[in-house]
Length: 467
Ligand code: FBP
Image (cartoon, rainbow, N blue to C red; front, side, top):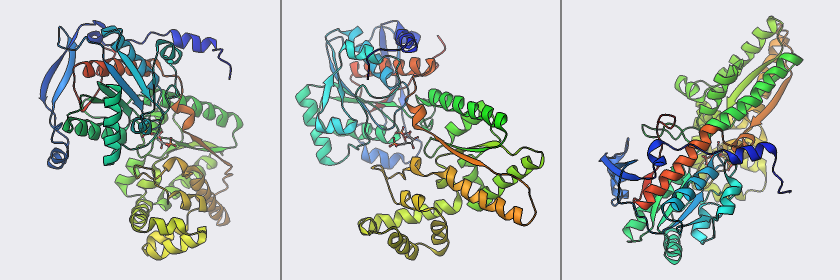
């Protein structure tokens, strides 16, 4: 690949992300507020995190504080799925550390948490950082989905940090990775290590939100990128007037991406998993609903349209969810045996005998590829939903339904479907100005928490657009 960068890349590289007023002043302190407490399971969490539970809310404000101005060494790791702005978190962290003391050092752990456990890292120099400012992707140091939770992995981290003389580690990741950050922070404090751990919430899925976190970074850019693609398809559909486009969007269990894109592009049908779950809708009811819309549009001469479906949908359809839960239980007990079976049909036969009658019927009605995907779990126990081609499943089932309706003379609809999946196309787009500013500020703020010696905190920036 050539090292030449395009005019657009040059313009993005020159963009100076905006910081909130307090961070801009260069003179900050940390103000402590009320003790924090989890929304649920307080007692259980307190037992698991005796050293870091209930720490006071910390706010970074302008003023003279006791944040260290000594040179410090900080590590950073990108974890989980790519999200636009990850590089700017690192750039913000780097700039803040250097602004406090030019001799401070930032090390990037390679390929996600696995790099932290193995002690694989590189020093991040000004030249490296400059190459990646305002760019999408996580390729500066790459990402991974390993967990840091086994006793030997935690001990390996402590050893690596001691050898590096690390004052702090910043973990940029989703809910699973921030759980990792909390576990590591607790362990290191218990062990008397000087390394503090700070989490930065990231995911395009938009489902890491609470009173403090208004949005997770990457969501804004990803939703805009997918919306542009969907908008183009809408125009194509109304130009060609002959295709129904079934578009699946990434977002794991949450429908936030699908809903945001629907608000931006107005497709004919948008399925929202949370609504489907709340109503207890079955797969057949969804298929009937889609077929009705297609037939109604056909009756007014429109044999084309757009349907948007969130990737997490299967887990929210009542009968499929029940079947996935049963499968998870069976896999929990017999995974080695099931994956050891050579043949797909042997696996289906075995599972059909173990599943309840209804779930066995639902499982049996799915295409082979989907049956196989539902047997996989990632290292955090999630079904790899991005591999379930829900749009194709719906196309198959809706086609059957319309064929039957035609046979009964109930419709004259012409149904020519096309399937699309947008996920990886949006996760590494250049960050929007919002994500570029937000992530740079997150990194800048994380540096202040490390300078303050805080551990077990998740960083957040509020009211970014206000002064
Ligand atoms: P995170 O939860 O790690 O942010 O991942 C987000 C995501 O993009 C999901 O939307 C998607 O289901 C998943 O990653 C895909 O995972 P992978 O990158 O392992 O294929």
